[in-house]
Image (tube, rainbow, N blue to C red; front, side, top):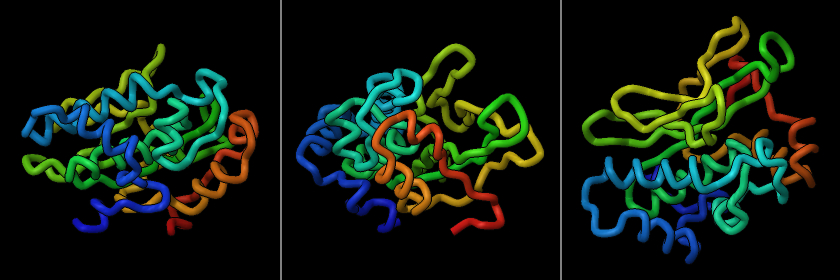
Length: 194
């Protein structure tokens, strides 16, 4: 589990602001499931989804997501992993491959998290941010993700990664605006997984 607790360049939970927020969210709570719920709801509800709000700058590193209170699903998952790890709760990154439109091409990755809950094992959570038609929740052991996989070329990628996929980091660090990210959303066919 050590890989899922590390502070890294992207999941930089040792950054003072991230660490302070993680401690504030935990408060005097000792129950890790409750702390995980608090971290999830904070990121889901307080960090704005960049595309929904057309909000710049493009963020990637957890501390930047927190500082600017915005991020695409990928960036929000980086912050959530950092907050969980700062509270000594193992957390990783997960992805779905979804249709950008209602059905069919083009496709893109959607970023979410998995958190290790002693009672349930790896539990996937999606702090993308709710809106009409999207109602992600933290209610273990039941998954309430933002999007179901429905089309033949869509997929739930089963891995729990300790670090973001390179294709995700590349898009978030090379694109200057949320519109540019939207035009270059990362994709990865399940057979191409890293």
